[in-house]
Amino acid sequence: MSGFIALGELALDGTLSNVSGILSAALQASARDLGLICPQSCGAEAAWAQEIEILASPSLLALINHFKGNQLLSPPTPLLAESNSNHADLKDIKGQESTKRALEVAASGGHNLLMMGPPGAGKSMLAARLPGILPPLTAEEALEVTMIHSIAGHLSNGRLLRERPFRDPHHSASLPALIGGGHRALPGEITLAHRGVLFLDEFPEFQRSALEALRQPLETGQVTVARANAHVTYPARFQLVAAMNPCRCGYMDDPGRACSRVPKCALDYQAKLSGPLLDRIDFQVFVPAVSAHDLSLPTPQEGSFDVAKRVAQARQRQTERYKNSSIKLNSEVSGQYLEEIAPLDQDSRQLLSQASDKLKLSARGYHRVIRVARTLADLEASEELRSWHIAEALGYRSQALAA
Image 1 (spheres, helix red, strand yellow):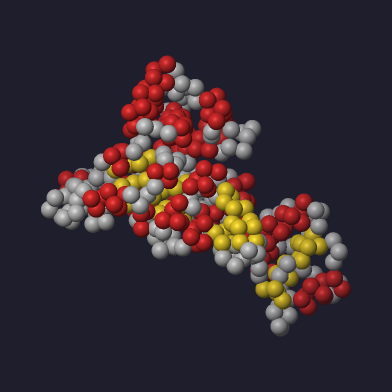
Image 2 (image 1 turned 135 degrees about the vertical axis):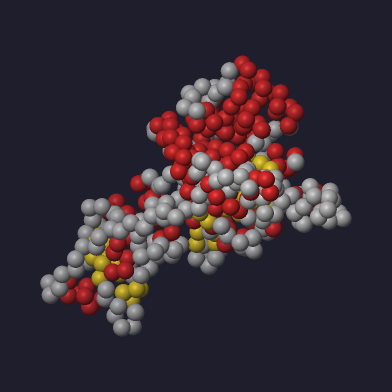
């Protein structure tokens, strides 16, 4: 057994029970030119590590018999998770055309999005339709995401994941549940949403400490969990999508239904979100209430299938642009590289400069506007940024809170 790495839990009856992190161990064994011994239930997961000998045994006795030559353990077969073809469709939502546009642009570049509006406006419905317009994981991303879910113990039957994660924890989630931690320093929701979407409904209702802890991962794409018995860094390159009411009662713009504390209740409620956190959110859009007239309109002609094609084409342009770097999407670009891929002409620079003074944009906000404009240009298959791209990107900035 000197040429193998062995993992598994041995039960009292001699059977081998599954353990977490088998895929990561198999890849490590491959890097060391070693084989892997694991429980039979983990064989399909381990089989994704190529060109190594894998012994997936149901029991210790079967493993002993294999080495003695009395029994042969067949090599496991890698398995793929089933694709979910029943995503909710954007055709189900009538009205909200401007928010649908914001959702499409955010999906194309992996930008963070905050939707604010009264109850029943369709914020959660719009967020639930985001997975239906996102492209599937690439082979490299699939391995990366599957390893994370394997370590967390959330992998179903060892099958390789193909679709981007969509995590929507309840607003009562604790700081360790959201960021990661616990006795074994396991990944949190932000890591389980890596290369996918983290949807936080009722955004201000989350613990203030948990929301503030999002700031560093949103900027760096990783999170370090430091505990007394562990110090682990996990990837956390996720797209944040959040939804909230304008105030606690939710009806700030409706004099007949709003509480008696308007507008102070709205100011207090929105003050739960700090400026530094909001500064990291590229889209802040207001979602108005849907009128009876909108609901009586016929079903929209364009659905998730049409939007998904445009999103895939925009992401393909980004893949080609960043093929020689570790960057995947426009939302990840910063510094000098951003100036190279998104040079501004005189009109665009003048518009952005004037808007920055008027909106009091920070340096981070300034660069995030350019990133969104780069995505808007990609959706038009344009290599050059124009003033109208900057104008639309600025329109999404602080729109909700201004309303």
